Length: 254
Image (tube, rainbow, N blue to C red):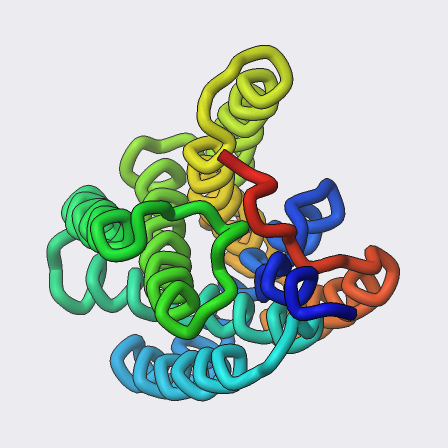
């Protein structure tokens, strides 16, 4: 493999159907796994956030130090962002007392600031250009904020708006269908559609995760958070091995 070909590859996977299947499963695991630590273990949102934030920093450091794209390392880092996103959103919404709407507004502002800073620093927020430590740092900060925002949005739709977990999941599925239609039948920026989809798949996973482990009285299935998390982890592992992902080629998106 020559140097020109090596530098044309990003350290993130190509965006395929397999990518989105794993992403949704990972966000669902983030919800059940985060709740397992903060609720089932009784450690609370602050301690849970500190634990998963440390894990997130370790995984991002490993990802940045890696010389090339490693599927298992990449998805382990994504899972770390979903778990810290879950506990951080719950901490903002509940422990800080600003509510789901306030938490969603705050996190949306942080996400937009992250994207703006990334765009100003490197001239693009396309994931196809994530092949330098600087770009990776912007990428993972943005990912973390998007995962946290998604959790808050899912809780807001399910609880405050009153759709319930299953109803909120259907709403986000419908929105994703609209984004897919825009991808196939419009010329809207693929980069904009990617980030829109990335954000929307997080509340979908959050509401599905809540539906799995919340008690019957709240509209959930009341499954064990540990069992649900273990099953999701095994599914993700098998999916990563089944969908043999390749690194994204630089310049593939726009």
